[in-house]
Amino acid sequence: MTFAGSGDAFGSGGRLQACIHLQPASAPVLLDCGATSLPALRRCGLDPDRIAAVFVSHLHGDHFGGLPFLILDAQFAGRTVPLAVAGPTGTGPRLTEAMECLFPGSSRVRRRFTVEVTELDSQGAATVAGVRAQAFPASHPSGAPALILRLTLGGRIIAYTGDTAWTPAIAAAAAGADLLIAEAYYWDKAVPHHLRHADLVVRGAELTARRTVLTHMSADMLGHRDQACHQTAHDGLVLRV
Image (cartoon, rainbow, N blue to C red; front, side, top):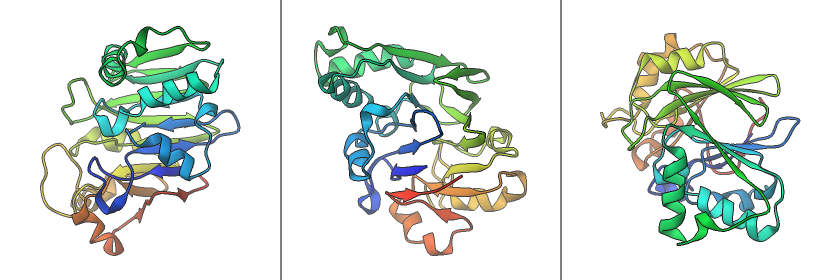
């Protein structure tokens, strides 16, 4: 696993937006694809054209805004294998709208590969590109239902909060997981629809993942990262799960 991008929406600490590269024995997949994902992947020496699927937690630009660039880059690179995109209800139309906003006409261009969109119900599951994805409802308004994700791949279980206020669904998604990737947006300041480090401390007994890594940190949280109760991610961090 490589945290190609570990930052918040605003580049706090000079970090790039959410883009987590997972490499099981089969083809790699992404957890979120923020607008800065192509440079993030290339800085880490990761080939965007090899990505089989992108799992999107919610439809804010710092989590899915890199998809138009990823798709067009693949088109110009001569990709021929399908690209799977799995995200919340509304992902298909929003992706088309984003492509038309950024590159008018791009959603209608004929390509040598297909983009196969799977929309995940907030209490459902699907297998996409060989990865079992289970979705849980997040508390994060984004114009479509936001998701907490639990992925099973390569014999490992990875839970990901995306952006969300505390909800018992986080504990459910993380139950017995090999790794929980958790937002820690602020240290202890209450910010609507986001997790604080303080929430993770108070709720620590409910989180039964074997390991937790914190991401999506604001400047406030970055100033406290040496005091964090869990490992903190940074751009380029590589983990073996």
